[in-house]
Image 1 (cartoon, rainbow, N blue to C red):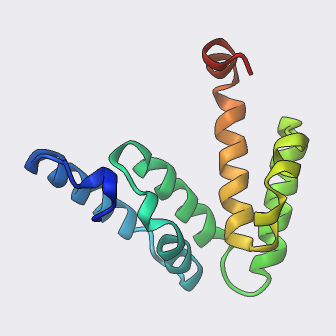
Image 2: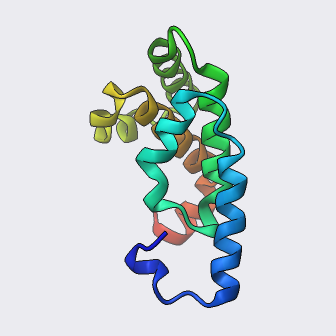
Length: 124
């Protein structure tokens, strides 16, 4: 990764990033997972590697025929369980793309899981 934020990494940080990327790459078990990784790989950081791995596991579980429908259903299920309708509406442009829908579902789930800390830190 040679994004601007990666240029100033130490050799140890580069090694940590490469280990994180290898962990992510092991999750590329379907064409949909490979497409998701290609679409989002520039955003990979050590701190977010586990979220990418989780997303690719979800993509793999839902991949194949009917992928788009299952991705939409996953997003709707997450919105229904979290009540984050406004967040989904704000980012509805990504809902047309099944991978974007799954990434949004994961983001909403992560926000819901950490709502107390976010409220405290950001006044959400």
